[in-house]
Length: 406
Image (tube, rainbow, N blue to C red; front, side, top):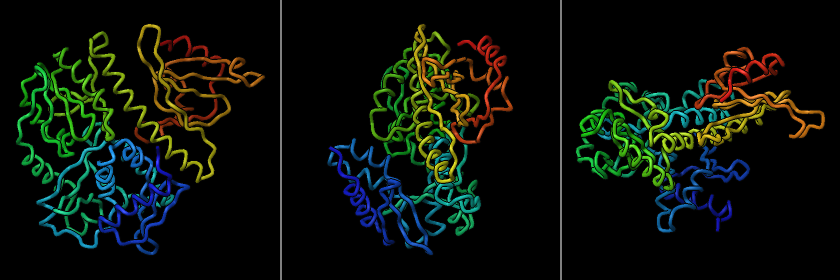
């Protein structure tokens, strides 16, 4: 049974105080968060929705560790590490880029339209590819702190030079041999919450004995599965293991990446490959989860600004052939933010305003973009959403439906 909201919030507040937080902590149930600190001093907002999900899923004995790990970056530390301590302890940490995008929207919700204040609150990061990025944190014996622009300025360091040092520190901590969980399939041996982060060290993967180019999936931050792109059995195995690992509370990404010329690219085997259906479905689960998190913060932001814009939901379907595809609906008369999907359904409500009386045309996202560029504008978030206004003409709808059948 779930604990009442205020009971869980007080548990979280007690954890923060036990970790050394000395600022006042207020409970804000309306926004499902803690407000730490008071103006004119620094104020932090700690949102509880994802922490609660992980906390409730954990065994009772593991729950304190969940919250201590969740909140380590939220403590206002009274002392600042020295430059030398940082150089010794700095490490990279990889997250999906959708997380950084959602955090920026959350900052916009809390700080308003002050772009300079939002920039100051954001963690600098290095993009690894379109899906992943690495930021920096330093570890001391009693704390771990994420590194923002203010700390870089205080130490007189640039992000780029500190990122290089962080990779050196991580390389020094990556000497353990990989475990071969099945023929041609390797499992990361580190289990230090930085297993997924080791994608910043491609040489660790090229040294493995694989059939073809390295392919990896990191379903949690503590585990990575690697096989070769020419190993059908290996690809099927990492898909099965990834599906099982996603049952753990701290999911990372179920998207597969392949190493090509030293860079990680999002990858799927060709259609018809035995591992294709499961790997595609796993990747779709990650994308759907990112869109769901994004939808929450965008709806809160639009509501706070007084905008009536629909944040559309990504839907998944299975075709008669067995293929899985995504779709969203664009309704006549509604301004909306659409997820990028395989298919768009254009809906014109009927006179009775019921589903049975509505008229629907369907086409692919690519055909819609080519035909309706002026009506569809990207908003710059990750994953991308498209702001749509107006509605196509009858001629455009018929032509797109003809050209864009899935």
